[in-house]
Image 1: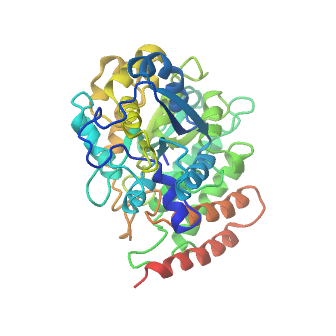
Image 2: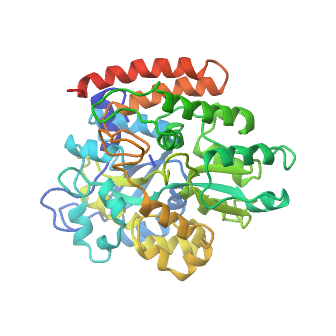
Length: 452
């Protein structure tokens, strides 16, 4: 689901969030009632966001009179755009999508409107229905909610059931990474032009390092020890990255150094790869026969492990509202609608139940139509979200909360720069050892601020 170049900028990336002005009593409260207004919404270019674009005018706008102007950008571009807007207090956007990494940092910096008041004040919203890991991850240190989840996710391994069966192979329910590598080798070329696996190689702390940090965790590595000793070139971190890079280079997708979530989703849905380790939210698109050639042919198993019992990540793309907005009530109405049970029903009825933005509400998994459409991935998605441990995701204590990120402002810049080094190694421009040596030097500079 989901920074900054410098401390100020990084915090800014998530600032565009939060609904709910201090002193407002509910989703309809405040002076700007919304009717006849327009709001500007900045979103990440994931399938769930393009779906909401299609549905807004004939539903939300008709009901409220509020026109929504969307700007949709790829993840890395989104983060840069939001950072610019928030850091300079330009106030161009009233609502934006950001993630669990940014929300607590930006809330601490007082950049976001608290939106729990709006959510709790709207009896139709169902605040208590939100999954606890989502509420926890999108709350500030004060315990207040600053981001309303659009959809939540963990990560798992997606694979072509038909191809695996045709090869006489078996996919374990909880595979190890070595088992995945062995399967990738056997599935490579199973169909003309098919590669064994797709893994993100696109630079970005929220792109390449989303899956890769989970691999580091389960190999026994960590970015920093509890007392802020950098570990980027440690044996465990190095082993994990070499495994990941070698697997991509041997059996991964062509042009992997420029492949992120969207590219891997396209590769899997068009039958160009046999496996894909990534966000659980990708399953809905894979099972939509209108856009996917492999609907009904995909199996889902838990995130691969090495030394840990589980290895999935935890993320939510959430609606937030920057304090610079002058249309708080209108923005809040939109955010609550976009996160509501009614919106899930709308998507199911209009676009198909597999495309519901799930992973945020317990009630979603009780809807008969959704359970049927998500029969292959619904239960495992919910289980993956519920069993993750953001406090202890690896083998050793961590200095901050977070599974696939370190929850400090500097991590966005650090993670992105180290990812650029590793992406270069994937492309053959450098070695993993050199990439991580450079990464270690950068991590040590960050650690100086926090080490006591």
